[in-house]
Image (cartoon, rainbow, N blue to C red):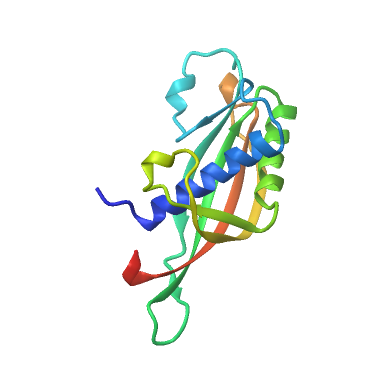
Length: 167
């Protein structure tokens, strides 16, 4: 199975956010669990959470566009959403904001060679993604279940430039 360019970008952004939150910002891994995807069924029947969660949500791109005339160079923007399910309003807001500020650390996110399975999770960097923007907002749920009371979403927009023939 081939790994698509989108898979490289998605895994790179997720890995960067996780590393920044735990390794750089020093948040405790025993109090925050990163999930590869959001599955609200995992919280069914729970009256209370025992930790905070960060779940990768939707991701989408802007269809891409030609970056230079007569070339196969493509420039594409991706938007990634991280859903923060907090133990409290303080935890939810804090984690969402921490991800926001951690991701915008230097405006660049390393594009990782996730095809190099032997080096996971310390994949080598093969390129860089440019941060276009990042925001964090509270999600209001009408008549929320206990786990839905303190949800935030952090949106990360990055730009990738690549040659179409090589992807």
